[in-house]
Length: 129
Image (cartoon, rainbow, N blue to C red; front, side):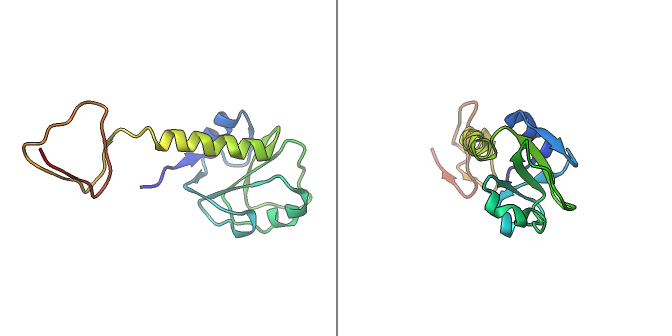
């Protein structure tokens, strides 16, 4: 199951400001020119600015000084440095992803197997005593 983050949550992590819907959610990353509903992208290089007006990405991270001159279909998160913020978000995601707790389904385990607290078992894993 993919992790889902809202624009408001991402803005909180990045100390950014939401321009658009703070409740819109994303569950994957995309290049700005390949953005689609449910994806997060960023605009750091001015040569890609034209793509922001066509992207279908739900959320786009941009520099604070970005001022659109056309209508947008994407929610913006304005930050000091879009490239650094995107990198910071990737680091945060990897940290959260690697600190999972719980049991995904399906898991195949022996009736006699026992496990400690704060355990993570990935889907399709097999465990015996």
